[in-house]
Image 1 (cartoon, chains in turn brown, yellow):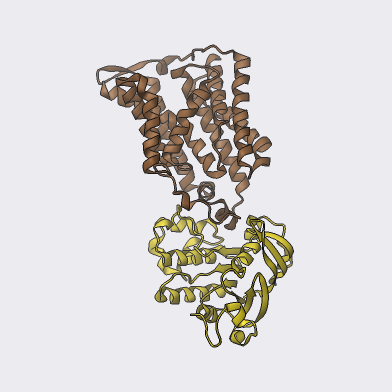
Image 2 (cartoon, rainbow over the protein chains, first blue to last red; image 1 turned 30 degrees about the vertical axis):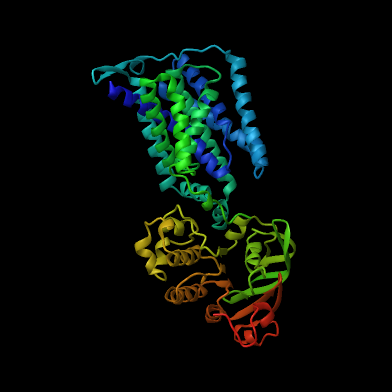
Length: 291
Length: 231
């Protein structure tokens, strides 16, 4: 039984990581919490539902979700956010507006009812682990989380653009002094955040249902994960996802009504002990070279 | 070919700080920008990079007007800034710090800066103050930039490290022109060949570094009593 609960926690952690990693990087390079992420998420939920409903396999349906999330995020950044750089309040309000518009648009087109994800084949089945049945789909979530972490880590560590992103997250001024043009990096990171949010949405439907407020429902936990992990830190987001996912599964198993309370308490305790989050940089180390 | 500032006026956070700075740094030269705290030396360097708001006058490099260019374009124009704290990326390794602005294989830096060799995989946040300054100068070398703006490299360093730093700056001057802000007169005199004295946001005098103490503005600008000199 405990093995199943732990695996359920790991699958939640994987899901939270995929959803939160993009949000964390977007905050790192733009300095704002991107509410619109919940909008790209819900687009991903419905894109996957559409794909599976038309007989696509899970992988193409997820790729569609990621592409839709990324494309819409790229457009939003280019058309709405780019003119607002330097205006943090304007950016936050804009991302909030985008979240509401996308959610309401989906509601208007597909209606408010919860739709069931048409899962088929192996992914709809279970395997017996520790004497108990465990959904195969949740194992897919864990595998997806590990793959996304390895891919993100590799891009950030081993590629030229990853190096520039990490430099820009640490200090945009120092990055520009090194000749790095930060504006395209922002677009790239924001679109990548949309890809990850869309992908997370695609993975969400099969275990929680397809409905227009799915993005808003996950928003609070996503922010908790990002804040606990340390804004702008991908390894921190992974650590926080593990804390929150495992806590939610364990507490949810023994005391289902306390799951969210425990997550908020975990955030409060961690922020009291480490205001910058688990692996975030201390406030004194933020961009001291800025104009 | 020169980096030229003409009657530069600039603001920081809306407050006028520079009221008229003139200087010319020719290719291969080293100019020490001297003056007491608050004279506007660091602001002068930051204005060249576009980090302070240029309000009037002109800044050009090799005939190219820098005044309206964003910071990253000025950097790509061949101007590299080493701020007082070194300006290294603390979350990146030493090798990554060299790589991000390098116009040459980062390993070539190990010739003039061999002490960086064993430090290459280390995160810059874990370096000592002296190691960080050497890394900052190593980055300047790796950038291949012909114009280096170096702010207070000697600040807070032990005498032994200072000697190594002076050596490193001498290495850099073989490859680039340097505009050096420095409070340590001995250090400035050891590496510079010209000086510009600043006082209350203006450049008030300039000349060969050997004639620095003969300047009629020396005591006023450096705030020393007669016969004294900074260490």
